[in-house]
Structure formats: structure tokens, C-alpha cells
Amino acid sequence: MVKKETKKIFIIMRFGLIVIAIIILILIVETYKNTNVIPQDYLTALNVSNNGYGYDIYDQKVKRYQPMAQTLIISAEANRYIYTKDKAAFKSVIQNADWLVKNKDINNNNIIGWGLPTSFDAFGDNSENPPNTEYTITTALAVKGLLDAVDVVDKSNIIIKFLYKSKKETYLKVSQEALDSFIENKFYTQNPDGTIFFWYSSQKSDAQLVTNCHAMFVGILQRISNYFIDKEKKTIYQDLADKGMKYLLETKIEKEGAWYWIYYPRAKEPHEDHGVHAAYTSDGLLMYKKNDGRLSSKIDEQKILNGLKLYIKDGRILEMFSVPERVPRSWDLGYFLYVMSEYFPQEEAIKNIIYNNILSRQETDGFRLYDDKNTPTDFVRYNAHILLGLSKYFWNEE
Image 1 (cartoon, one colour):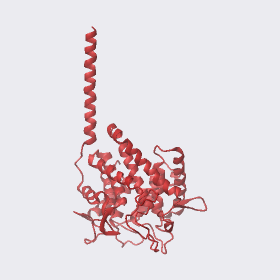
Image 2: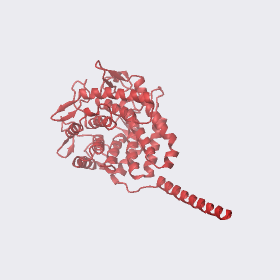
Image 3: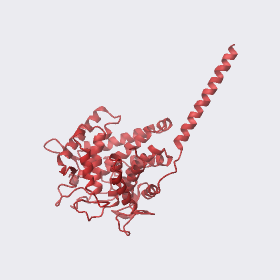
Image 4: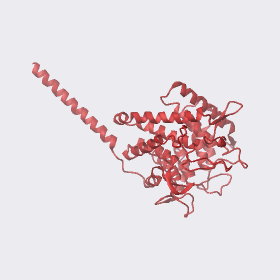
């Protein structure tokens, strides 16, 4: 009798181990499978983005790593991975996120953030910023990318969650370090009414409002507050996000049911955001609302959409609606497509207009900076904007 029971238990255990082995095998296959069906347009954009290494409009002779390009690649490939579980997309996310972590303080000034690898005079006032100055927009986009990498791990199977737990924690930690650097060093101005705006960069000469940079930073502060972080820090992020959002709502311009913002209010001749900057600004506001900011009820999505529609005329995207003859750059098209696909997926006609504008610039070696056939195609920051837009256009829940 005992032998029969022992044999029965052995058979059950053996069967259980076989089931467990099958489950593990399925998970491993799922973890490392590759989905090869990739639209050619996306594949071109991915190849020419080249993991963020290449030429730039400010550096056309020497190839360098461009942190902004890498952040956009992370977000694009994270989105693709979540929908396809393509191992190549996962690898791309981790590779570029690891680069951001490794180079979080590339100029060794104890400020965590990312910028341009070359010097740059942002306002043409002879106050040239040194290479790797921490720019607000690039740092906000980098944190956005790192949080997307966190989401990739969280939305993966149990094996990836286990194997990449430490990396996920690092990405979240570095994201906070970057935001804390801007907060603790007070790279923002507090207005008399208690509202704030974040500066263009970490340099005092750039202690000015450029709306899209501020908006994106506000949005990312609100987004990270929804992650598993210290409660006190979460409150700091939310409070600053609210103060920054209040300022954005105070400075908006409303015209016939459309909201838009001035790019650089202190300019000699102030004008509206350029296309890419209008898309950044909208992303910041809508990210804040999507992540339940306290002032969300005051953000009118339809009026933001109407503002974006000002940049569309006669089947093409405009760089500036006040100067419709100006030809947009490729990054205007890319980030515009991303925002429309992310927040307004029902606007099929608009998305298709942008997509066709992008296709009209596609070459085998990239996407032309302008419509002109003779314009460059190999600027990685610009191609990475196209990549992100195409990712959301191709893989998105509606």
C-alpha cells in the first residue's frame, strides 16, 4: 500500500515537473522571440537613428552620441516592444537606457542631466554653453525614455521582470536623480504669484522661459509621481508640477477655441511655438492630465487639439502657422505624429496627412531635413523624432 502511494506521489510530482518545464519553456520562447514584420518606413528610421550615434545640424563633420536621439529611440522601441514583444526592440531599449545611465553626468559637474555633445549659444547672446550642458528639454525626454524602459520591464513576463529588476530600479533611480538635480539647484524661477517656470538649461544665462521645455518638464514631474517612489519626494514633484502647470494655463493664448503658446516670450519678436515645440508643449500638458495632475480639469484637450490643427494647412504640416510659407523640419513631422497618435488616435485624417508628409521625405539613407532633395538625411536627432512618431502611428491602441 505504501509503495503504491509512493509511486502515485512520484508520478504526480513527475507530471508537475513536466508541466512546470513546459511553462518555463513557453516563457523563454516568449521572452526571446522575434517579430520580424516591421514596416519598412519604421525600419529605415530605426537604422538611420543608429542608436543615437551620428551627425547633427550643429555638428555636421563629426559623428557623436546624441542623448536626445537615444531617448527618443528608447520611447519608440519601448512602444514597439510592448505591442510585439520583439526581442530586438527590447535589446534596443536596454542598450540606450544603459547608455543614458552610464553617461548621466558626462561632464562630471555633479549635475545629473543630458544635453548636446557640442557647445551651443541658445539665445544668440554670446553666452555659449559648453558641451554636455544639461538642457531641460533633453533631460525631460531622457527621463521619459527611462520611465518607458521601466514600463517595458513591468509589462514583460515573469522571467524578464526577474532578470531586469535591478536595471528597472536603476532607471527609476537615475530618473529621480535628474529631476532632483534641477530642483535642488533651483533651475527654475518662482513668480510673484507662486507659479514657476523651468529654465532652458542649467546655465544662469539660460534662466529664461522657453515654453515647450518647461511644459515637458512639468509633464514628466507629474508622470514620475505615479511610480513607486518616496512619498515625500512624490509630493515635491506634484507640487512643482502644479505650480508649473498653473503658469502654463495663465500664459496660454486662446484664439477661436484653440490654445497655443509663445515659444520664447522675451524674444524681440515673439512668435508661436514651431511645430515640434508645439507638439512638445502639448505633450507636457496632456502627460500631466493623463497622470492625474491636480489641475487636470482645467486642461481642455479639444482646445489643445484645435491649437495643433492650426499647424495643418492644405495637406501639409506648417513650421509656424503665422508664417505658412516656412517649411517644417523633419522633427516637426515626427513629434507631431507622435502626439496625434498618442493623445488623439481618432484623428485618422490628420495622422495620415502627417504620415504622408513623412513618406514624401524618405530616402534610403534617412529622411530629408526639408522638402528639398538636396537637404541632409543623416541627422540622428531628427530621424529619431520620425522614429518615435512612426512607432506610435503603427503600434497603438485606439
